[in-house]
Each structure stands twice: as structure tokens, then as C-alpha cells.
Image (cartoon, rainbow, N blue to C red; front, top):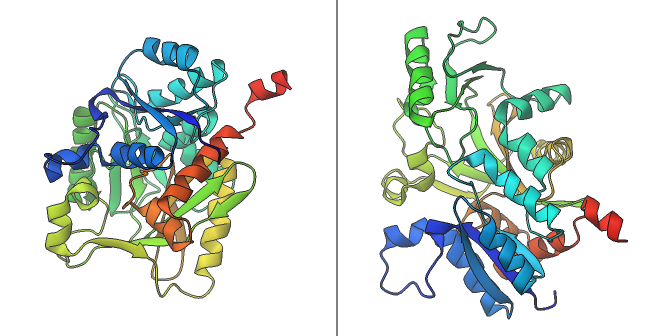
Length: 344
């Protein structure tokens, strides 16, 4: 890819420094993704400007008008503190006729809304755990079609916010307590799902029309006590000390039953297209002991840090981190947005 002017959108509190020197590991973890992307793009010869975004798009509009970037590299995960509002920033970029990386607004809407996402997956007969929505501020009835254990999480928040071992409930009392906790702590509706016990698998996908499926990745829960459910809680995903204590790791999946990898690739492509995803995404699956596969979530614009699952899976497929970032930029530069048709 030719050298480009790249405007990198990050949250206003996550604009990284020029160097890691003098910063603690805890500080670095906060903006690790932003630092990795920006530093690698600079080292590759691109002209890079980070822009912190909080609750206003005025600076973004000015930067596009004045600097005229070739590409906006979108690393936002929220806008004005609301996770589902990042799709509106991307819609704004489309209105500005500005090429950007990652998923389009429609794909972000469909994948971010967990209930709508699961409804679409069910419509397309893609296996996903049975579910029920418990709206905030309203009473809900005990789901008759779901059997314990059940899994309770926020219907909108991501990055495992609100997910703990207590999210897996075994009776009605625990269920009602956890639903109330989600309502109060995340200010969102609660999603109640059938709990699927099994291996946790991740599949990355790159592309707009033509899709590339990356090697299957797996989270292993190490020596986590048997009385705790093997789920990707916030501590399991992000607490390095906790991971080291219990030997929790992610790596290329090994020893998958015959035919499982092909099924995962086929399902991942179907999910990607059913949700109108573009750019790059990661599908989260559970593989039961009997071989049954269930998709848990589809994640548009997953974490892009160099040591995280997507980048490591790409490396396994032969794509260096620099090559992965360049592929993502090319996909953004050539995404067939509606405004391109008017300009052609």
C-alpha cells in the first residue's frame, strides 16, 4: 500500500505517548492497542495523526476538512460514554465521504445489538444459545424454555463488562439477583442465555465481499478451580496477574474434532454476511463435548493490539502485524460505500 495520511480516532483518554519509557505496565495496558497501531503505522512510513474523541465531532470534522486524510483508522469503542454510539461516528464519516477502517454502520448496529443479532442468527438458522431479554425497569417472568444453568449479561455492553463467575446462575434466586445487578451496574437491559459448557473458540475474518478466515483460536482456562465456570470474565480477559496465576492463555486451537474447523469457517462466513459486516471481525463460539457448535457473539472491530487474538491469529496465517494493518487499511480504502456510487 502506498504511504498514506492516516487520521487515527481514539478515545480522548487513550491518546498514547510517543514512547513506552517511563510508563508502568498498568498504564501501558490502558492504551496498548492505540500505541501499537499508531507506532507501527508511523514506522511503516505513513503520516499519522491521532485524534482523541469524547462527546463532540467538531474536531473530527475540522481535521477531515483541513488535513484531508486518505484514511481514518477507527479505534473508537464508544462515543460520549455510550458503546452503541460508535456506529454514529462511522455514519458521520460516511456523510463526510471519508474512507475509514473497520465495519460499516449497519454491520456495527446489527452486531452491537446482541438481541437483534441473535434474532438474525436464529432467522438464518445459525446455532446460538436460546435467550430471553429482561428489560431494565420492567418485571420479567422466569423463562420457561430455558433450563438452568443460565448465563446473564448486558444486552449492549462489550469487553466483558458486567461478566463474572456469578453470571452463570443455577436457580431462580440467583437469576433474579444477577438480572438486577446487570440493570443497576451497567444501566442496560439484561440478556439471559442458555449456558453452553465447552471449549471457547474465536475465529477472525477479514474482508468486504471476498472473505479471508483466519486460523481458529482458543482460550484455555488453565488451572481455574473446577467450582468456577469456564467463561471469559473481565478478569479472565484483561487481568494479567489473574491470567498468570491460573495459567489462562489463548493460542491456536489444537485437537479439534474432525470437520470442526471447516464448520467453523463456514459458519463464520455466514455470520459475517448475515450481519453485513465489513473490514474485520471476530466470531466467538462454544464447542460442546458432543461436537455441537454455538456462536456466542459477533464482534465488529475487535481488539487490534499486536499481542491480542486477532493479530496473533493473522500471524499464524502468515500476516505480520504491519501486513494486517495494511490489509485493514486497504479494505477501508476500497469499501464500496454508497457515496462512491454517486461520485463514479
